[in-house]
Amino acid sequence: MKTLASILLGFLFTSAPGQNNIWKVYNSASTNLPENKITALIIDKNNNKWIGSQEGLILFDGDNWKTLTTKNSKLPSDKILSILELENTIWIGTALGLVQIDEKKWKVSNTENSNLPSDKIRKIAKDYNGNIWLATEKGLAKYDGKNWTVFSKKTKKIKNDDFISLAIDKENNIWAGTNNGLLVIHNNTLTEYNSKNSPLPDNHVWNIIIDKNNAKWIGTKKGLLRLSAES
Image: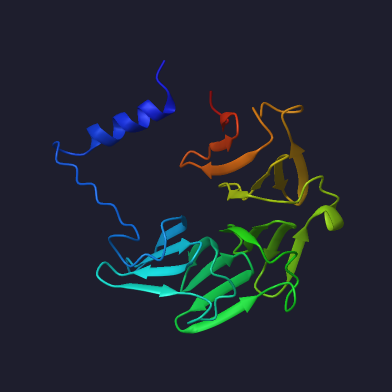
């Protein structure tokens, strides 16, 4: 039986025409990257690369490198955990707060100036109603443009609210993972799943992704789970 890794490697080396695959490594020795631990990455609508690291935020336009840190920008922390582009705004989750960059305007939100439950913003996602969802170490936070709603132990009696993964499916259901299971929010109804009450192979839910067929791919410490209406 082929493993997932062998399938992916097979795709990589057979999908491209010819055998002239070009691999290029960018690291701190060969470029202006401040360090080699890349924690987040997006490509915006202008083809700029926004690269998160543990030593700052790097912008790469294909030719030039620019590093933003707490010393030369309004970043509250050099440890970048997540990045998302929404229309004309770049949302950046750091270890010490949330940053919104709209052209040259910066806005920093944290537990002191907003209703964020935590300053550690691990994941950012947008649902189909336009709400922004944040996975933090003290709950899920939903922002509707004006108000914050928090799903946590304190507000919703969730068993574990230290969230590390987040995804939103085509039916607008929220899927969020912790090291103690999976939380699903469907029409404001919260359901918690773990290895005892579901097919989850392990309670450490580290990654969640939704494919084009609305199937949920859930990466855990002990295996990959695919959840779909189809067999």
